[in-house]
Image (cartoon, rainbow, N blue to C red; front, side):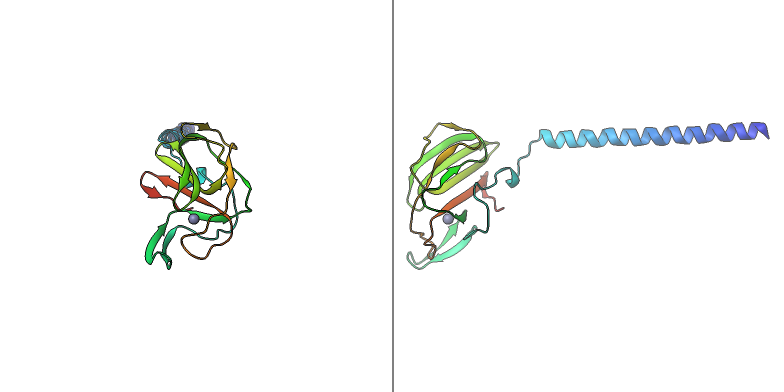
Length: 171
Ligand SMILES: [Zn+2]
């Protein structure tokens, strides 16, 4: 009888030991996976919030332009903003273009690395030039007034695009 109890105790200890060990291995495996995912990078659209928040005037998509008589692809999101408002980037990166654009007034393109890029249009008084490195919160220009080629937006606004590779990212 006493021997039987002893065996049961060993059996229970054994099960507990293997159970805890399995849980520990599982936890290790999970933390390894999380680490691997972080290492692969990966930035998402969430890492590139627009400097202006709120309900957009227009989102990315196809639009018919009466003026040009053709369908155009609007590749950004437009946020109403007062003329003259200073625009500050929310991320670091290298300026790959800063100057006039036939559709967007003045624009600034920033390469954020890992194939991510952001374009700011509808600007004037640019404060950066091609080749500059920008840090988060750095001012790049002010909102200008530009007639909207897609039609009906009269209000001054920031035109904001996020690209990953060849694909426009829609928040
Ligand atoms: Zn736009």
